[in-house]
Image (cartoon, rainbow, N blue to C red; front, side):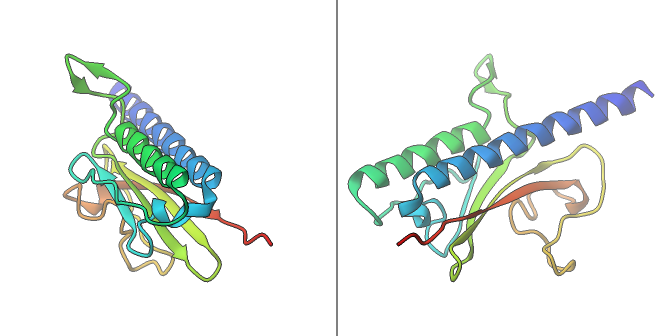
Length: 162
């Protein structure tokens, strides 16, 4: 009973961490909305993890907006890696195998999808896209078994003000 409680507690902790990371990037994207495409690397999409850390060069907007986008992505990448909490130089603060993704979900309506995925501790249903048969792309294949794949998402809609 105690070990099951510990597993559930760790799963909940990881989910809370992921939700905070998703909301953090959504807020950053909203605050620098004129260059939102920089956060998703245009239509290509962006994936940041311990093994993929390159922040793309932004060419939209002015230099200040570009610099802010690069700083935001670098800070988010560091949080995904767990840089805020260390022990003997080992990064401990993020979820197991954390991956952060920003994609342009709907270009016509200027909607971006922010996702954070991680490895769970016990098997459950593998995350899929809305169609129910396509594996969720953020973190797909990174955890050995897709039934250990966890993901949280949010959509950010950038309004076209005139």
